[in-house]
Image (cartoon, rainbow, N blue to C red; front, side, top):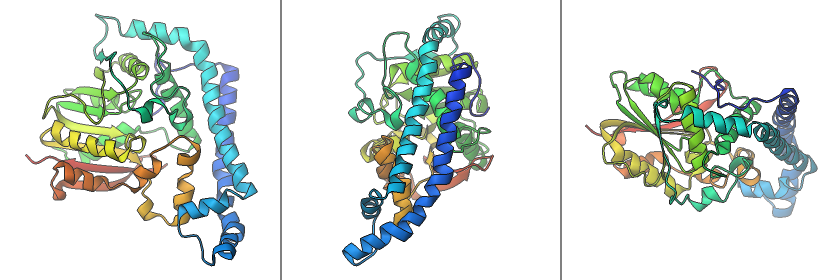
Length: 374
């Protein structure tokens, strides 16, 4: 299995829609590959000398660099093009989803009807998602993760998968391996003798990282949780379309509601950078509580750790927090997940923090993992 799979729940753009989407990718590529690199010269030749003349010293933090770079016309233009490219990408996806809305809803009902489905979906009408997730259109996704317009609505999930595929292509991410497969490869290399029978994916979104666990471990019961009903309906139907038996639930990462020692693997994929430090700490405690003796927690996310970067690169990598509705970006980049795992109860010598390269070499992922004592 790999990224960008074709299935019945995936949006189907027509010729004009695809052309606009390809244009937005080209625009994002231009901003990333041509405009972004020139900002380093602007900083060296203009912004930094101006700061030194005003303060008698070079900038010492990303915030100080931001204070002068935001006055530079080239950086302003770069940020505007980056933001416009992201907005245009979502707008082009919205055109497709508006036209496809009826087909997606009817396909959802067909794939998940009783007697046909192999997995399950548990929604809670009284569930209240965290405000930080419900009130922010994260990475500018229209309506955010909690968008829900009715009992058959799946648009939030369709936005997430189809728009996410385009976003990844615009960032140069390869398509030969999904995030879930990276985590599974990490697990199999380090624990080759383990045969998990129960897996939990926290923050499963549209389920693209959840489904690979059903193929990697055919005997395992696989569960995924997230907070938005429409995104979970989509994940449920997507899994059914791919012939995968996954049990989806509308639950909170900080308090999942599952019984103690229910799982052999507790995983997350790109969830930590969407969480506050408080929620991430709670997810680590849940990981320990939910794991059976000998079980493994695997939490994968983007490879950005500010402690490894100088002030310029911290400013450069922090663009998404300021401009792309990623409120916890810096919190994630500066937190200490290994310490969180130890505080949650995992032995220090059974905690790992590693960078794992995607098979196609297009990027490295950050993984923090831990094994519960037997």
